[in-house]
Amino acid sequence: MKRKRFALAVAGMATAVALAMSGCAAGGGASGDRQKLELWFWGAPPAQQETMQKVLVDGFNASQDEYELEVNFDNAVDKNIQVALSANKGPDVVYGSGPAFASAYAAEGKLEDMTPYAEKYGWKDRILDSMYESGTVDGKLYSLPNSIEDIGVFYNTKVLDTLGVDVPTTYDEFVAVMDKAAAAGLYPSVTGNQGWKPVNQNYISLFMSQVAGGKTIYDALQGTIPWTDPTIVKAVQDSADFYNAGYLGGDDYANLNFDQSMKLLSEEQSPFFIGPSLAFQFASNYFNDDAGNTEDLGYMAFPTINPELPSPYYTLGTTASLSINAASEHKDGAAEVIDYMMTDSFAKEMNESWPGYWAVPLKEFSLSADDYTGLSKPFVTAMQETIDGV
Image 1 (cartoon, helix red, strand yellow):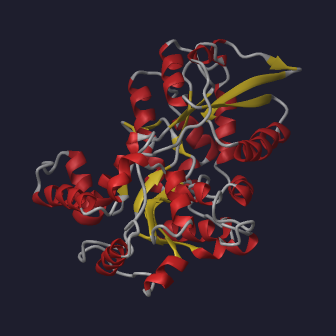
Image 2 (cartoon, rainbow, N blue to C red; image 1 turned 135 degrees about the vertical axis):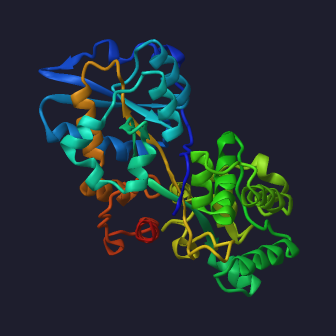
């Protein structure tokens, strides 16, 4: 059984809290005969905003004639959505930084039960079971993840060549390479929580999964074993030992974020970047055709720590969650938007220019790496392997 992890997202441009209080849930305007739908999203960079406008907004608006979707990019999206929902306002489609955010809103009655829409659109048959279930509360569906992700390892092949080592296939080999890198004056690996402290959840989740195992963590969540179970205690201690050994960004863990870490990896300052597969979206800034180093970047599943677990063993997560505002006047339209995003065609188009964030968690993830260029190719391959592993 694979470990399910709460999602993490990264934020960008700023929007005033006043925007959060003026959302369309109290009554959206219309363009012509169309009803306006709103989705607030994190402040993605300009190129990725263009992709979302073209593929999601323009694509959805052209697919029907009843609604007009608008996406607002917001640096403080999590905070502003919380403020808006508390006032029974906000966007029709509710973005959250994962199922944990959505479950808290659901408990407060701020999200619509999407179970009827799941039955209408066949979401349970279409979406990976673990991803679908991550959005349920007391058997009712309140969110769907926009993407599946895995906490794995990015590596720079040039650095490995310089160190005279192959891509590691076992945990012991992996640690040995990091030790050799440190001895050579490099970072053993790069990552960090600067600007987004929930990054910490990546690594405790990783060790909970890799040491205690998904079944043990599931049993603890269900209350059938205590959180003081020796295997869980060992997982926590092993994660602390890993950090204290400098294997997570060394002394700079608190000073680095994912973008800076990927830059260091491209500059050959480390052999590895340990983090979620969503970081492909940051990699494209530094590993690209202009730099001529696309082939230098590799990605692998984190080497299995506990030999009693299968190999590879995935620590799953989601990049974001999508829900329907309980106060929205256009719930059917919001459901149509979410359904539009839960399709093979949407995934294919988004991943052409925005790898890392849109591995729609379909049971049939039929994207072909041969149809892509740049980092979209290894990202699609990595997600196919993850989904097959699930």
